[in-house]
Image 1 (tube, rainbow, N blue to C red):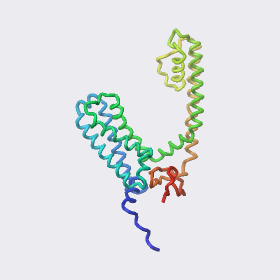
Image 2 (cartoon, one colour; image 1 turned 90 degrees about the horizontal axis):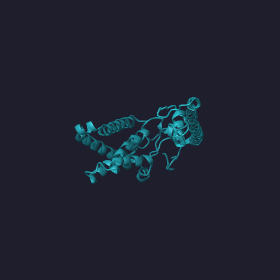
Image 3 (cartoon, rainbow, N blue to C red; image 1 turned 135 degrees about the horizontal axis):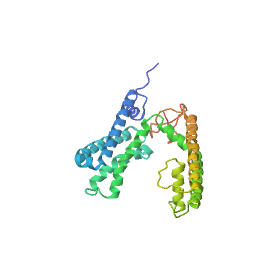
Image 4 (cartoon, helix red, strand yellow; image 1 turned 90 degrees about the vertical axis):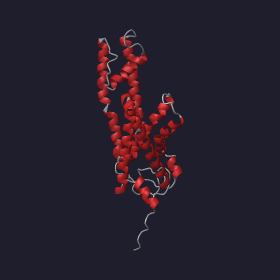
Length: 271
C-alpha cells in the first residue's frame, strides 16, 4: 500500500493554528491564551491612574509588544488559510483586526488620548478577549445553543417585561407619585430590580400593600429564575456529541458533523 502524501508546510501550519487535536496545536492554543490574558491584564492595569503614572511607559512598551505579536499571528492565519479574504471577512477575522487596530491608530493621533473617540478605540483592544472563544472547548456549543433557543428566550424576555410593566404600574398607583415612585418608568425600574432579586434598596415601598406586592414580585423572581437555565440546558443536550472540533480549512470555523464533507458556513470542502 503506497504511503499517503505528506502534507505541505502550509497545510501543517494550518493544522497547528486552526486545529486543536495535535500536540503542537494544543501548545499553540495554550500559548495564545496566555498572551491574550496577559495583554488584557496590561490594559486593565493601564486604566488605574496610580499604576499608569508609575508604570505608564513600560506598560505601553509591553502593549506594543503584544500588538506586534497579535499582528504577526493574524498575518500568519491569512497566509495558511486556503481563502484569506473569506477568513478576513469572518467574525474572528474582524475580531483579530479590532484587537490590534487601536494601538496603530494612536500613532496617527498623538496627544489626543483624552478624546472620547480615542478612548473608545483603545477600549476596542479588549475585543481580543473574544479570540479566546474559539480556543475553549464547548464555547461554540454554548453560542449555538443560545442561537437555537433565541425564540424561547425572546418569549421569556417579553413575558418578564410585561410582568415588570404591570407590577410597576400597580406600585405607582399604590404608593402614589409623591414618594420614591415618582413615575411609571421609575416604578418599572423598581419592578425589574425586584423581580431579578437584585434589590438595590434605592426605592422602597412605604405602605403595607406596596410591601406585599414587593414580596410577591421577589418570590416570582425566584420561581422563574430557573426557566432560562432549563431552556439553555435543553438546547445544549440536543447539540452535545453531534459535532467535532475540526476547523474549516477555508474560513476556520468549527462545529461540524462527524461526516461533514463541506463547511457549514462557507461551503468549502472539508478535506
